[in-house]
Image 1 (tube, helix red, strand yellow):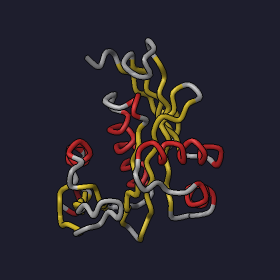
Image 2 (cartoon, rainbow, N blue to C red):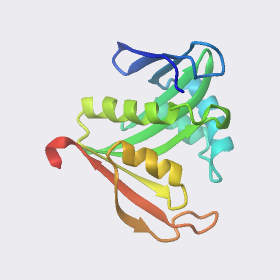
Image 3 (spheres, rainbow, N blue to C red):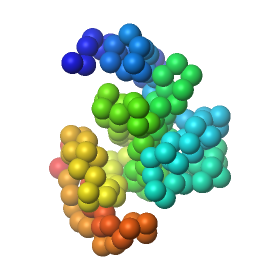
Length: 178
């Protein structure tokens, strides 16, 4: 049972969620906010833990600090970054680059909240459609994206270099475009 959950928007692009099922502690507070330069190391740590082909610290830091087309959000419990989501803005399209949640924090809706917040924030900034690639075998992620209105629109053969796995190309368009 998810327990009681209270969501309040604190300011643009920051959401605080209090939930007795997050963080293992009663009524832990989860904050979703824009990533800051100080978060690059924690994001790199999540990359190392969550992905077989992790992005480098320099790539992450560049996206957060210098890349005006990048949007990164982090999920934080107390002082710990426990998840993040990244996107590149290309015209009016948003290409979701990565979504990651620390293994010990999974199955607590943190990824769901990150994806929802990323879509909301970028739609406010003029993005009208979102796309991403996801491993064909990653059923949990596919279901999460479908929950947010993504649909499989294509496939990239042998997309992942580590094992040659195919990627599904998924798209989500705003209500105006459907």
